[in-house]
Image (cartoon, rainbow, N blue to C red; front, side, top):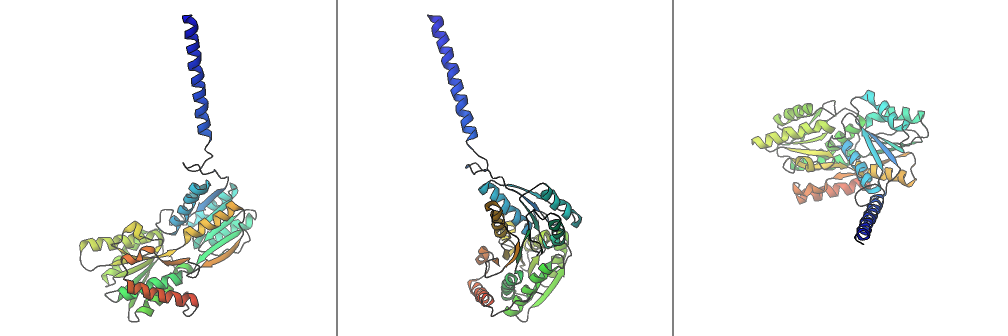
Length: 344
């Protein structure tokens, strides 16, 4: 009798273990991929190729990658990036994703335009997209921005808020997209403060913070108190120079950020405002079209009217209400066509 009781108990325990194991297995397989909330795993694969600024440029490359990171969590897509160390890497990096049968390959930056055209023509069945350049190919979606319009607005801020009457612009390479930043900024400064002196410096690079720091030092030594940069990771050096000077005391200096709200990275004490481009929004939108099956080639330019450019939402922390009101007035005139902002 005791033997039968012990045998029954052993069998009962064994059965319980089996049930527990089955329950555990069911729990593990109930998730279909994606994040911890159970986002469905998507079969869509997206590759992103940066320019030489890199994915941590605190600017437009980073904004693009952050959009894909968000879609990994939201839609369960697979996303990867390749950082280009030189222009010679562009074709190789683009082809890695195209030949790997990725559903979409992004190129970030004007410099990738010619190489993306080559890759697109050689691979007509591949879907590609690019930021800041227009590629004439049926399988490429080109997104550009009216940087001159947004830069006009931060130019107004600089023109109204400079205490020395001297402001500066630090650019990366002297290419059309950066010339649009410069042209808009100068027009905005002069509209708000016709007597302002504007210093211009092109470092020739988007990945050289030391050159940005040197350019900023020269301008601040010249009496400039506000610098607007459009130089990718080179702009980190502009911020670092301004931060060091403000910590050392003396005359207060400012930096106007670019592409994303750079006060989130460098702080409100040094970031007067930022000229934000909707790179993240554009990358998210076009990638979702691939997910939905509605992707098609073509080009579009996003300006003030499309909310593609503008001042950072945090601008009111350092920019007085009366200046922001004047900025809004200029914005409406640009949207209506009353003001035509130059592009060069």
